[in-house]
Length: 295
Image 1 (tube, rainbow, N blue to C red):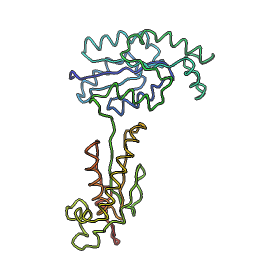
Image 2: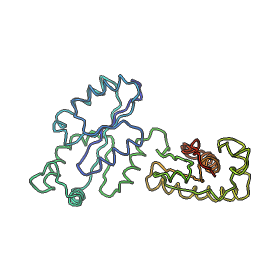
Image 3: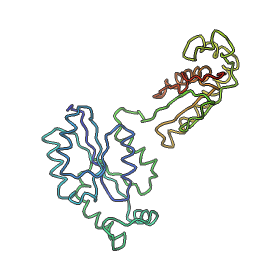
Image 4: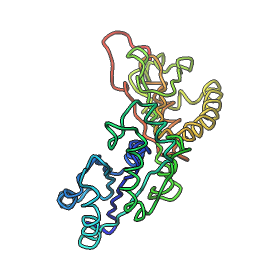
């Protein structure tokens, strides 16, 4: 395996946010495993090594692995010294008062207090975790953090490319006659723009052809629309990022999804690529029915 191999152990108090943390690591591109028994880690890394494709792994290890406290120190030492893996421990904590409130809100029992008060289990767990907490490279107190704020903390601490937020945009064209995309965050209807369908030499082409693209874009109405739409996106996308979204789908539609929407999706995607990671797709560009298609 390469020198860049990284293992993050996510542990800490039950109810402190390990589920949110694991989702955050998935967004950062880590291969994530929940509740891995410590004694399986060496064999797990052998399998990872055989693939040669996975270099960043995040594991949640907590009270469900009952032998966690006896096994973890020896296993981590073996992985670090014998296999040369960069190991970081993220410990999530919260105040006793906040943890009690969270258990009451979810109506769940603490794993160490099935037949007693949640506070008794929390105190017992805190004692058991004191050793691993002192070894953690990062301790995050989530008492006053929202899930979004916890995600931001993890992104800031573990992102591999400085300043690069794990956020991307999918721009897609579609045809209204085939239905709205169910996963779209922003839907824009461009059926009011000049329609290449009514130009005989352009009818059988698509917005992927330069002639069609130029026809759609060479219009004062299109220019006005593009200016307003791009200004809108410059306003709303930073807001999505601030709220913790990692993906936004922008769907641009015309009647058949072959001419106007394709051209505008191309234009919008190229505009956004200046600042974001963007993919462009055309859902219905090759989907033609036998009936008259007025795209």
